Length: 227
Image (cartoon, rainbow, N blue to C red; front, side, top):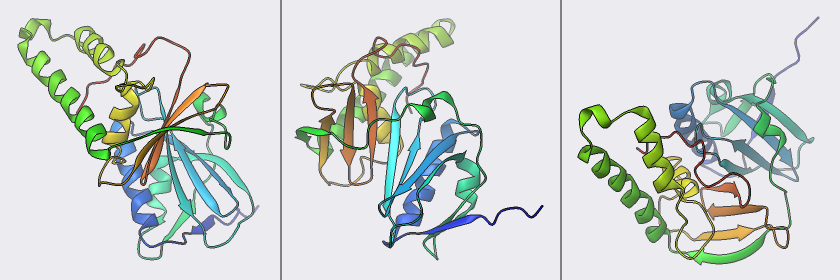
C-alpha cells in the first residue's frame, strides 16, 4: 500500500515559518519527546503545546494564504520542526501520533472576554525578577539542602503566585517568557472565558499561554527549575 503524501502548509506572512521553528525549538529544550496538536480552519493554523512541568497550554497561531481542508491532528514536535522550511515559508505535517491526555482538553475557540491590558515590559520584568529570586534563594541553601524536593517546593511557592491584580498564576508568565512570547514591546492582554471563568489567557503578538482558572492548587506538581 502506498504511504499517504505528507501534507504541506504554506504560511501567508513572512517570518511565520521561522517563528514556528523557534517556538518548537524552545519547547523541545524542556521535553525532547514533546507532542503538539495542530488545528487548521478558516485560514488559520493553531499549534497547541504543553511545555513540560508548566501545567499551562501554549498556543502559536499563523495565517494561511487561503482556507484549507480542516486539519486536526497530534504530531511529534521534533518531526514537525524537521519539516519547517523557513525560506519557502512552509511546513510539512508529519504522521499522526498518539496524543497525550492534555491534547483532548483544549480551551474553547471563542467566547473570550478581555479583562485588562498589561505593559509588556512589566510582565517580562516580573518573570525575570522571580527567576532571580529563585536563584538567590537557592544559593542561600547549604549544598546538602539543595535537594530536588526543596527545589520543587521553592518553585511551587514562586510560580504559584498571581500576576499582580489578576488571577493568572505566574507559571503562565514564566512559560510565556521561556517560549519567547514576551519579547518586544507589543501589547499583552489578559482574557477569560466569560461567565464560565474556566480559562485564563495571556495573549501577546507572538503567542498565547492559557491556564485553567480553577482546579488544583496553584503550582501543584510544578517540579520546574526556572531558567
